[in-house]
Amino acid sequence: MTAKKIKVILIYLAILLNVSCNRAVDQPFIISELPEALSAEEMAGKRLTPEILWKFGRIGEFVVSSDGKTIAYTVTRYSLSENRGRTTIWSIPAGGGAASCLTTDVVAGCFNPRWLLSGRLAYLSSTPDGMQIWDMKPDGSDKRQGSYIEGGIEGIEDSPQGDAVI
Image 1 (tube, helix red, strand yellow):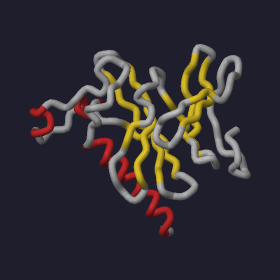
Image 2: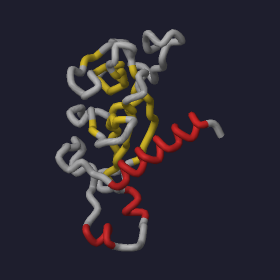
Image 3: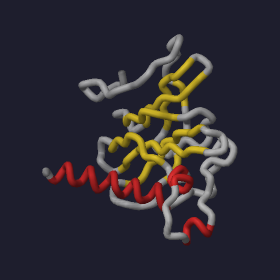
């Protein structure tokens, strides 16, 4: 296994540990009570039940910025009582540090993050016209819609030159 593959695996495991063990209490979630918090009894207990597993965030895809300093990733949290989930985009410094949720203010789920050469982060989010491309600053501010395609789109990827998302 190459050093690069090992580094990617370690980054993924660090994100997983951060998401599973920490809950950003100061950041609201739009779907009622997402995430449903673990009770003191559940945290102190030695049994991992299916109900407890549903309370953990699930990491989706992740992308490293072109300068290698920041990792953007998605986390889906589920509400058992509502039988639905919501996906948010998070970032964390590649060298370690606190993770921050970039899309707490977005009602719809956010998916498919991609770093742009400008340093902004492109992603997909739902609109009345379907999924559209949005972008934001790396700190989650200045969100703006970048596509207006009738019926929406399903995914974005980096262009071969790295100068656009397609």
